[in-house]
Structure formats: C-alpha cells, structure tokens
Image (tube, rainbow, N blue to C red; front, side):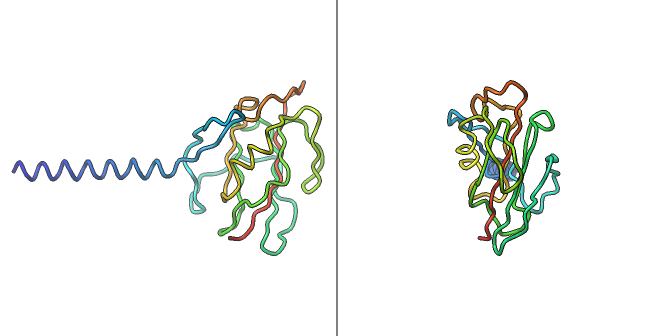
Length: 166
C-alpha cells in the first residue's frame, strides 16, 4: 500500500510541475523604456475567445497581396492595455511603420509625430511586437513604459504596422 501512495504522490507532482511549465510557456513578456522585462500575462492564440479592448479605430487600409496593414489609436484612459493583432491565421508583424505615444496626427498610412511624444516608442514597439501575431502594450504605465512624453495634455498611442504571411 505504501508503494501505491508514493506512486500516486509522484504522479500528482508530475502533473503539477507539468501545468506550471505549460503556464510559464504561455506568458508574454514586454520591455519598458529602460529595457526591463514586464510580464503582461497569458499569450493568446487565435482560438482564444478573450475579447480585446476596443481601440478607437482599426485597420483602414486594404490587404496588399500577402501583407495586411494594421493601425491602432488609443487613449490611455480608455483602456490601460492595448492588444492588436494581424487578424488572419499565419500572419505575423514584420514591420512597424509608425508608433508614437504623444500627440501624433494624420491617418493610417500617413501618420506624423507630434512635438511631445516619447522618443523610445518606435524602438519599444518593434522590440515587443515584431515576429508575433498579436502585440500587447501596457498603456497604463505610460511614461514608465515608453519614456517621458513632455506633453501638456494626456498623450495617446498610435501604431501602424504590417503583417506578412509566414
């Protein structure tokens, strides 16, 4: 009877360690302006039904061959986390055309940096999003995530990216 109990406890331990390992492999990591890792949470698969916080506008350019343009604009107060993705299976972010956390202007395909945006925004978005099908950014951390904006009114986040079929 003692052997059966040991085997059962061993089996339970293996199941526990396996579930911890699986959970760790589904964690997403972002980097802030200082290069410090920020744990965001679970990675989401295309089959996940977790809704994304609504952004103020989505992709507004047509699909071009094997490329999908993606644009997002969101105010930090609207949602502290911004998630955006390539929308189609088999696509990943291959280019970040524009990113600004400040007072950018323009439309998708024609954004312009304002005069008070965080200087590290483009570099950080590239570091956190390229090669992924979905990107998660912590807007609630604002200046801590992207660096100081020096904006006199609340900044907003704008990104224009390109997804390519892999």
